[in-house]
Length: 291
Image (cartoon, rainbow, N blue to C red; front, side, top):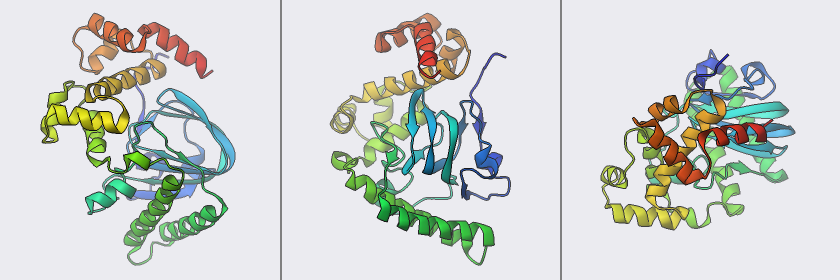
């Protein structure tokens, strides 16, 4: 059957009884029955592999998530899983977790480098002491979900915040934050691209939304990612094109239309200019690499 789209799942598709959050073992319930086929979730996921390994493909990039690693997956990323492992899955909707302190949210919240990183470094490796601490936090999360005592929602959100603080410290220790510690406006720019890449493809459009000049936005992007703002915008468009090429059988014309291009031949030239591959060459090569 021809694949014409990438399935999008909500939290309740996985956890029918969940409110806005859930925690479970990877091998139980809906978590153990997750599809191997490429899909997107509209919520945030934290996968902690404690034993075994899973072959993961995120946005056409394959790697193996081994034991003692934690993955952070933001909404909208195209994920594909193969294999079996033990561990934990923490899932929550964006509306559930929001730190009012904007600076705190950038450093340890859903807008942080844990989930949104210019180089997509989303895997952490806690040591034994870290794992003991994190296991205790998750045990309390699971207890709150199961017993649903008084104020259990408040308890869960605070436990989630504590978990994110702890893993943020691991990230800092592994020197993944480093020079990007003040990347709040840049992360906001990245979020805006994800929301508007189909209809806004000029730096000036995003500069206006951020209340800064295109020159300042370019300088900010260049200093934090090594790419200009224009390169960031084009890069996201190309990433989405790669997602559709790899995971669906849509034609070049259909993909061009979905990405906001009215001229399919122009889109084909655009893709080749910035990837040095034709659309068909990328589709064939990317699928060969993940066989």
